[in-house]
Image (cartoon, rainbow, N blue to C red):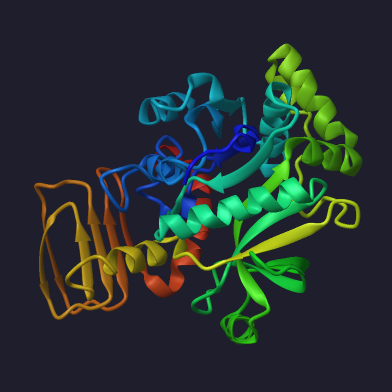
Length: 362
């Protein structure tokens, strides 16, 4: 895919401020999952940047993160200019992050069109992915007051993902829909109905918009968002950034009547590596033994199935017998044994650890 004259105004922002708590204890506050090599010999954030190759020049690739991860990101992404890492002094939610990087890029290029991408997803069929991103850029070029989303055609009912219900077709080729509503993490029964209906797409949280449009939309939603972002950029003071209102969702606070939401329909192979069950499914697809996936240590197993064993110490021998649907994660200071049916309950474990004052394990 070659770059055109218009693509000089196309930017990509890799959003990398989260701590990835659902992959604890491998993913920690000090070393979150996006800066770890979980599915290949590259970190997840390197994989994300690499799949933009040929679509967006490195000088137009930005990373949005917090101060505690900035230096590590510089070290793993040497081709991304250091000044393109937009750093929040503290985490204030995704709305604050989007407002900050949009304002930074707009000041560089008032004509900028931005695609935002999560830093911790697994994507194959890279050409199809790039075609979808280009379709989003092209749609926004023709509809500059819209906010575009890339929706993934679901391949199975998944209760851990968000869904977008589409409404009317607003463009035939590539296919683009208007948005009816968002739904977060439905029950299995509801998710099955969503997949069967053909009216729902997985929400990949990939958004495409003119920087100017998102700034205007945020200004109209809550003037304090951009006022405090601009105060922070002028002063560099954390106190100014901490005045940015915390909003529940980066897109849903926008007035969709004035700034219409549109879904670019996509079908590349995609996974949000949001928990141990998902990571097991991804690695099982590339392992010869799909019954049990082991990384790190030497494994001896008798009659186990549908399990994942992750061991940090490569000199350790692990033996398993008769396990079913279990994840075992062994780090230098934490051992996790988890039923895959309870992957979402990691947050309860972390809450208990925090309440006990055991922060060194978080």
